Length: 264
Length: 267
Image (cartoon, rainbow over the protein chains, first blue to last red):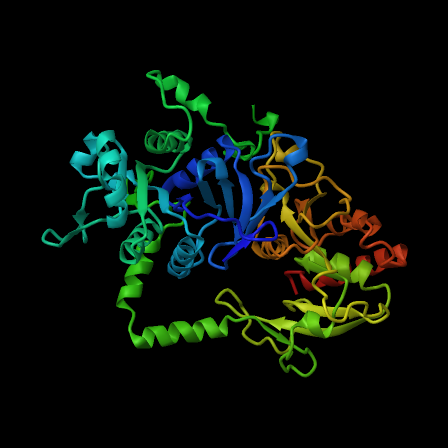
């Protein structure tokens, strides 16, 4: 459930909700970190739930001594009212059998809060691509029918690739075709539920493998930026992209502590 | 998918924990019998609060029955040893209840005859401290959590081998206004499990709470690790709670020797 930081719940009517799916390479979550950190979004509340593994730590977006000691938990909500953006960040994995209840609680909050639309940032196993997908861009999008009505033209102008259907049961040759997002966590469930509940939702995903997924996260935020233009559009020089997004201080030591000098 | 050194292709674990496809399929194939089994299992795993002596359930929440201004939770053997030899040794503490729980990881199914080494969770109440708050314990309560972690969990730019373990770090909620007796836990370190669950609850519901985390390289009961918690006795919230430190140290030493004998693998 949503619990505001302050005394009353903020008004989110007409806002765009950005959220990650906990998926392969944690790309959606890394992308959310970049967005929240770059736009300097402020925390407006918590999504308190027993569906996620508990975790706490000090402010992951700390920039100075003064703001480094605010406690953060596993599911928090940030906003940027000037751009009508609200962001949900998820920092831990689902407890077994709790992912579906979480989706239900989340979508019911989306409806009750009055958010206009939801954009889910996600990823899918790159080893599951078919030949055609191997040769094309690694980014894909999906829109629910109600979202299609409002943004179809804009998406068409961006020349984006829609997520293709694949065999429901890959091993069986004559099985039906459907949308599959292997490694996408709750992405498919959120998409299906939003279709049936007529929620305006878009899914933006990238085919990735586990490893150092920072470049994938940067790629995904740039993909989102083509549409939403949350920061200045990309110039022709691709090397500029990395410096436009502010890397949060919590991304330090991603690969562990320092090494003992005696090793060398 | 990943290839191992032996040339076989195996399904590599995904660190995002997305084994949900099996879960979804299980959900689709679930029969009413499966659902009944699943619900029974969920009931068995529920945490129950009991009065230890009589083993009857507590009818109201523990804090309603025993409202308090300070709630101290120790998680793990070293934290518990600190609490029992230092804090609970001063004044008279009365056992008021325990939490009974079970999950598939438990090796013992019999939780009625818990010895002191096996007890999962026991609640104690300081008899001499008068009940100050009757109706709204939550508003004025302060929570202190003590626990240990292995020093290799601590992320730092220097090597963990060079750290002066054991050492303390703290994490506090927004409403905890006092200062900690040690540095706060630096980014990007995080805490999970029960201490994180308690702290999350307190942060969300605006309860003042502080977690003291002892990073140590000895996870079993160890004198030096337990003594690393001593600085917290000088904090505002726990000051005056411990009367006799030398006596407590003696009790702690006795606790160590008893446990050493018990853990002798040759007996």
